[in-house]
Image (cartoon, rainbow, N blue to C red; front, top):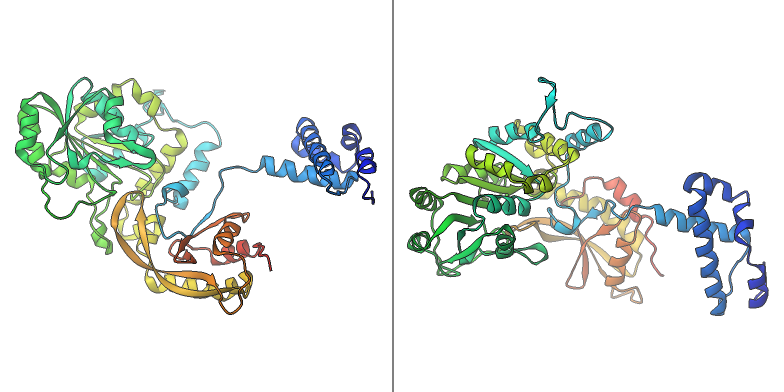
Length: 471
């Protein structure tokens, strides 16, 4: 209806029943259901009434209203959790889902997600089985542990282990290892929830063997080491070697727990990266139980892995809390597929996305940056200068916090000669609002798009082609 008279537009608003009976509504009802379409029509009409009351002229024809309804329905049905391009330079970005799964893991998830599986069924015996059996042997074979079990993340692994082995008892931990991880989640809080009594040992920067010995004499019944993967203390420092902690614990007849946090199943130095402690090293040093993550340096889905002495793992598995923290079938399938890749170490770096990106040659990264620079410059327009720049990537998720690896980025900054463009902050927002969002990082007045984790150049260029820049 073509008129600027608000009263006439109000009168011309189509009724809900009329809109539902329009030919254009039929495919919407077929796709989304009559109830959802009816609710969307009411929302659309309500928004139009608000606009008209505000003096805004609007198209109130049935076609225009149903077009708006279609948009509302599509937006409502779109999943909130969706893929993004991680161009932040942080490979294992906690807020962006950490490790990317290899194709083998994705295929395994799809296979078991389609229908029934032998999740807790022993096919050989024809009776109830244990879901841990699908991956425990792989963990045992890789780490050399006597036994293993899995839960839904490493915080859960620590919680369950402490609740089993240290409930009602004192747990001795160096003050320098009382870490806080993401979301204000602290080791002392985990201990409290596990029903343990924290026994702080030594000082923030220096802890000695005699400090742990004194704690044991005062009644501590567990020794725990926490790998400080998300920060580093340097200078006048001292810590007790793991084999000495193990010897102290075993002499006192108490368990020694080593929480590795991020955890890796390979020696990263072999790939030219800084060393991170492995479960194999922790067990060799005498740890009775080792806990670590599945979705960080291991390169798999979110999971917490617990391995070590068989008698202690058996106790942990019998804890009633284990059921509340167990893995679902799709995570088990994904983790099993990722662990299988470790049986072929010669091809691990090419098949495991996390390791591939961490070891990606700088020349290859630069080639990707060069390949998209010019096209990206055309898309963002003359108000911005687009260049290839050196930058530093980081591993992320608390691993090796002070170490970075050289990388290349496409850097987008204001073009001083042109001016009058939108701000860099607003440009970053435009990238985030794309159908396939692009997440970079702001640095010194420029938006950096680190190319380390970008594999699909064509897909990326197609995605950013939808960018809308105010000219």
